[in-house]
Amino acid sequence: MTAIKAIAFDMYGTLYDVNSVAARCNALFPGRGEEMSRIWRQKSLEYTWLRSLMEDYRPFEAVTEDALVFTCAQLGLSLDAAARSALCEAYLHLEPHPEVPAALAELEATGTTLTILSNGSAHSIGSVVRNSGLEKHFAALLSADSVKVYKPHHAVYEIAEQQLGLERTEILFVSSNPWDASGASHFGFPVCWVNRGGKTFDELGQAPDHVVTGIDALPAYLEARNGH
Ligand code: LAC
Image 1 (spheres, rainbow, N blue to C red):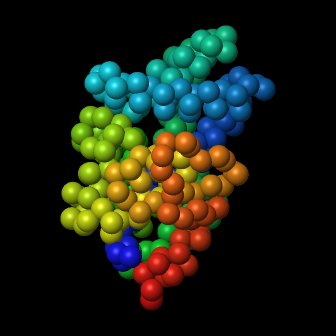
Image 2: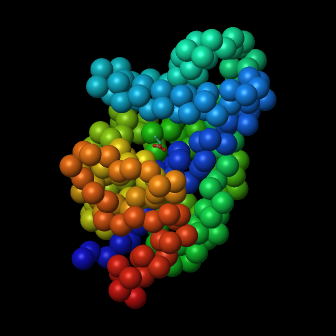
């Protein structure tokens, strides 16, 4: 088995809790926060896939805002300009999952190159990572924006290979999103699926190489896999 030299992390859901916006949603629309946050995230994803198929790219922040407008319309919630911008801003201040800061420090100490490869724009990724104080751990923050199409299109996964100057088999792709883990596996990355909540993996003809319940399990996995 090829030794892993770098890790490319998906960002939303994998390192950061997208449901951390639920509290902001709930403050603006009491009792509706959880439902709103769930539909908002799902719709944002759908719009990225649909726009990729339509070849009508729009930056991630704009897609996120479109999905928010849809969510409020569907739930019959009236969204004024101030609430709209406050909620979009909340997406730049997501909280990392609890185990993430210490696990990144531990992984960095193993000498593995750490990167993020996300559908978020460079601005979104940079803001989320800086706002959580985790920027120092990453050698590169890679955005789908540079190829104007979204994961799971292979062109996005290729960015990591090209920017890191490594073979895809040397890059462990880590995602909590089964569709993303499937896309990365189809591309040819070794894949670790982070299944925190007992989710069901997608039926897309792919399977992860490894499954963990948090990224704090990665140092031991790398050690076992790389054989040192
Ligand atoms: C990411 C999202 C889509 O690319 O999970 O970070």
